[in-house]
Length: 567
Ligand code: 9MR
Image 1 (tube, rainbow, N blue to C red):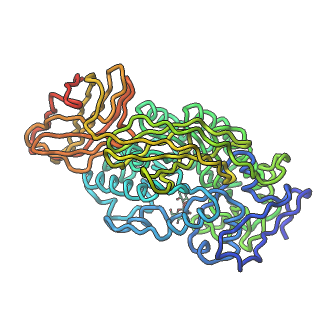
Image 2 (cartoon, protein in one colour):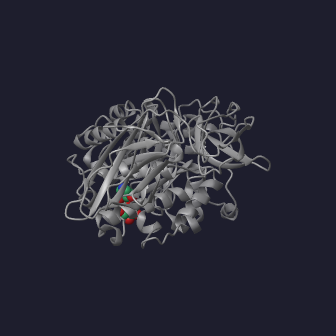
Image 3 (cartoon, rainbow, N blue to C red):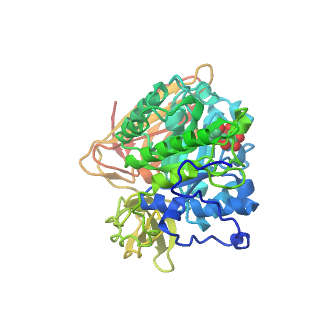
């Protein structure tokens, strides 16, 4: 028998005798404070506590489903959103596993983190062997399709856009992505993800970056540079695959804090603590200490959103398959009994002041205010709600000039960008706030907005920096355009126009704009997220193309018909 590390609190034995109730969404009964599930304590601290979902037992194993539903308020599909699962052959998408996890999460009021879009592993062979041009196109299509599928689903709030792009020495990993596309694939992936969902939180994720070391410093430098370049990196994930025989990483809290100072959210994304099997009470105690340390580090850093455990039962863990003779890495044993590490996580989250589950909703948000209205999109902002524990996010609801409202998206802040609207059409919007426990506020009053007829507005002051990068030995090239509003007022609904030199042809679709080519005349129209450029603001857009010999650059550019300076 395994002796729990701490005597004061009896180890909780999973309550699994409710199989009959499992077809319906599980309701977590308000428990006494000391016995409350992990999620109740995490919600009281304004954090998420999550698990990686294995779609097999999630479909049909009662004990697994009970714990998954009752203990966690966040979930990451362990494998169901990886490229080999979602697009096993070119253009053939399957979302059965991912949809299953999202449905279970929705039924149990859990937020979903998408893992992962661009990774060197679990990506089918057909991608790995593509030419640079075809690989770029595949990446564009994959991100647009996978992120786009869940963009308006309120449960899916964040993505690992790129995963494990570093080697342990801090060099970029020499993956097929890097070898074929060069390091710009990272920035491109983030821009594409933002284009597919302007409101999701976009993360970079890696292992062996929990403490301060060469690899985490390389990641820090990359995130700083990407953000300085305007690349939409919102979040950094520290996987947290730890092993008691290798020691606890140094300066975990300090590492989180230095990333937080860059303005990103941080999170622990794949926590497990393996050991050489068999377990004994000494190893269990050490493991519990590791878990406690990680939870305490996250609690100490405001920008740390929460912790995802990579599974929860030793019955289903990647560890024994990969590390021979190691395992027992999770919070429940293979028979669904809690281990000392469960108690450690629970007690670290429970600061003793958690009386009962949070049942108080946030205050009602202010009436949304629309700005940057174009023929196809607009921005909304509103006075933020307050909450006794913390506002976790907002639901945005839309209706036509008559008819009922439906949720069109979520936002973690008091603003939202809507897109894909029809020109000259009236819409109404309301918002409501949510807290981490799932309480929702009353709906705000509605705002009524009519989209423009198109054509755009704004100053004639603009600047264009155009770069063309030929691909060695082929007829391909990549063109990047930085468009800057040098005027004194906002530039909205811009259309950039220029003439490509003879023999150059855009390979659709391009990125961060809607590109069209007629003859050699090219226009770029903005997407929802970059349709308004504040004074001094800029956006980076681009496309791949082919040429018949010349890689000259266009010489004149106009925005909404007015000439731009060229640098
Ligand atoms: O847990 C995942 C396992 O089921 C898969 O077989 C494996 C394939 O590489 O990926 C595991 O999850 C990994 C995650 O996606 C990225 N970080 C490391 C995780 C453990 O290998």
